Image (cartoon, rainbow, N blue to C red; front, side):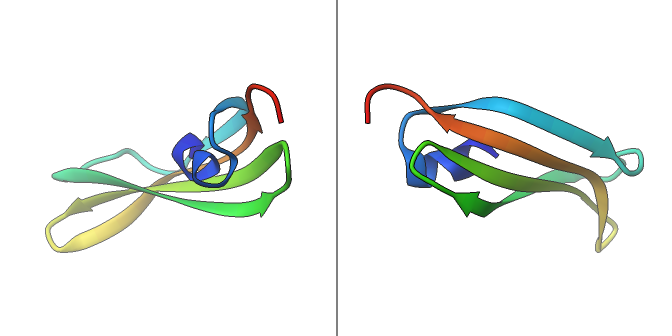
Length: 74
């Protein structure tokens, strides 16, 4: 999620986040996909969804929402 914010803000930190666990993460691999929902000059709001992959299926296991803040001078 912070990487997604850094793609538009540059140097940054995660200043707030919330995670909802949907189901146990079973399977062979975990995949995280993050999206920028909003970005301004100093902060971005991002969403991240984590999926479990196995047996040819992909299942949602967690959803996160966070605020990413720019560090350093403008």
